[in-house]
Length: 393
Ligand code: TGC
Ligand code: FAD
Image 1 (tube, helix red, strand yellow):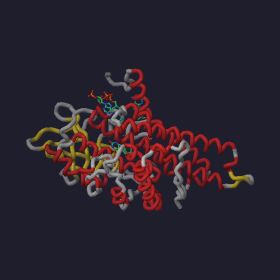
Image 2: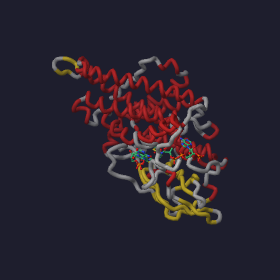
Image 3: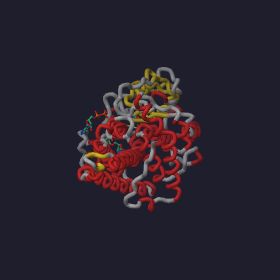
Image 4: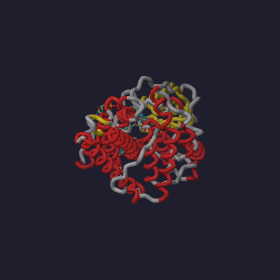
């Protein structure tokens, strides 16, 4: 039974518009009605809940900030963040699917695509008729995507793409993949690869203990002929995929708050009811310390996300500011999940409660879209002006 109540310790709702609250309410109701009742079952059997795709599109989770002329929601960044928060309150894997579709597939087509590409793909991606994935990471290049070896060669009216990508969310069922690969000059370009192109396969990655309700796979390109019209004309270099990551990392900064809220709310409720030594465990100082620190950290994370959202609305948020919020808020959520699990004692390890699932999911969230360490190095570089990544610069 989903009894969730959103914590709002600092009355942050007063900073939201009526539209923000409506958008949040519609996502929250959908999560309660459609997602929460089935998500444990799908996570236990390690399957992506395909029946949720239609509803995700209906609540505007695919491309919330994409202009309505292309089928998107035309919403601002606070609304986008609130949708991600509500989805991740349900499950990080479902938020992942929405992040990938909106920020990593629709965004690059919108920002770097030709008018024909926008017309061809965006409206159908917004409705979920087409699902997409984003291929940047390779087996030998995760944190250093600039070293990628995936490449393509010119061959008349098409190019021939070779190589592979690993750890790709949505790959097993995606209709299209936005793939980043090097041209003959060694420059990174984005290509739209469609399922069905000869030599393109998407084997699923099995045996994950994390994001079990999200489908992860490889992208394998065995001399795939990709029409030149599928190359994104508007960008070249690593800044192409990294610009997409700025969008998705921003969504994760909000999404992780949702997971933390759910863990906190569950632990608070449980602590008030669970009796030991003749008292509710909420009466013990050690448990109060855990709960008090949780709400403090959630409140700080909410303020960070809200301020970042207002900066993004004004087009003033720097990539390093996004990194700080992604790193802080995911770390906050993971710590809260671990503490909340303990508040529930043995019950905390069961699927009857969402906490253990959130905790395991967040182990992926703290790694993908730039690891915890990488985001710290991005902040370090930003404040000192010195790169500590180990590259040439
Ligand atoms: P570096 O030399 O610093 O930069 C290369 C070029 O990129 C530009 N740049 C950015 N542009 C836009 N946004 C950013 N955040 C940017 N960061 C850097 C930079 O200005 C430069 O441009 P130019 O014009 O001078 O060429 O790059 P580096 O090789 O030293 O690497 C550093 C960096 C930033 C790439 C690395 O720190 C990093 O971010 N690694 C993490 C990789 C990552 O996040 N991968 C994510 C894969 S996708 C994913 O995980 C999806 S999960 C989705 C889900 O399921 O929700
Ligand atoms: P590595 O880069 O090998 O890092 C290993 C460790 O070394 C980390 O702790 C890291 O912080 C540390 N490290 C690396 N470099 C440095 C350094 N310079 N200084 C200090 N420490 C360093 N990718 C996509 O392209 N698309 C997707 O849809 C996608 N979905 C994913 C879904 C899941 C479930 C997972 C787990 C990953 C996904 N990824 C995706 C890949 C993800 O972005 C990478 O896993 C991540 O960027 C880290 O790369 P790596 O796993 O190769 O780790």
